[in-house]
Length: 114
Image (cartoon, rainbow, N blue to C red; front, side):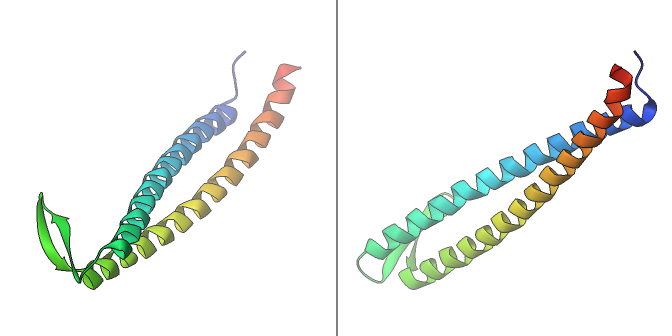
């Protein structure tokens, strides 16, 4: 049984959307890992005594002001959380589009199956 070109096109679009969704989910997971690492670093920074800490920069440790490092980490954390929020919205939209397309495909396949 040969599928009409419009159905084949919808199937291709569905597969592409699935791949895009997987990419979004992977990006979101990677950013969530970075977020956890920064939160842990901030927690440890809070425990550190003194006004100076060491920060890794290009393979070497550099002595830095504790408050400067804390501020940098907090800014990075805020940026990552915004990115997660954006990716979550993209993921939800993509899920909705996939559901709608899946329904269309199922309806298009019904007459073909009978």
